[in-house]
Image (cartoon, rainbow, N blue to C red; front, side, top):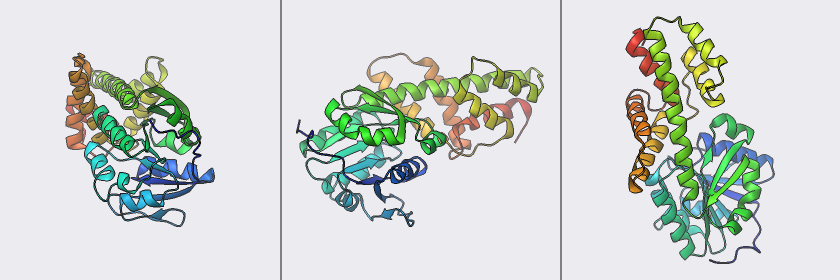
Length: 298
């Protein structure tokens, strides 16, 4: 492993992917004094504060020393990181690559190995939290990689998040992210199924939602989703297509280690149905899907 201990974090950070989460992280870094450059696979983007580059390689060359990947899946990671126009081709030994994308552990391990061959320090650092937490700089950063590289990235993590958890070696951050999102998905499905039964049994809708908002067995995150479902507000904080993708990755990862996860498997099926109907809405649209089966709602 190359020695990165004498290299400070540069004042320019490059983002590959600059969507709902990354743009909020970028704004917080700008407010803390960092310069931000970005690349978006769609080619869209650009404002007075952020300079956009036309390829991951050019983005990496323009970044002062740190590149942050924030893309939706394994396929997007491959396109962004590898090949003659990929980020790795534009990075030099001693630079830092932080992958905040929610991808498979295998993709994170492959990226760490490819980066290491070039003398680049790589971390898998997906985040727990949605757009409100990203706005507030209150994400929980889940990091896989060596302790020396984590310490080097800590100033950035302290700006975008409230807590950093060093989960272990490369790939560990991605594994922990799947655990957390699996629990989150199952929790929402349980609340939505409870609402489904209550409505089918004839309970008054407003009373039911108010009662569930009052009890301690439902987490603050799921109470936020419950309030949104009550009014039919499914503006995406965490789109269904991404939540269903994470559940799919979890099922594959669990099968690789022969871990039985039947409840998470059933939840994945519910989210697959929801993705069919509400791919870009918040994953809490599962409430609407189940409610429509018992209450004849749109």
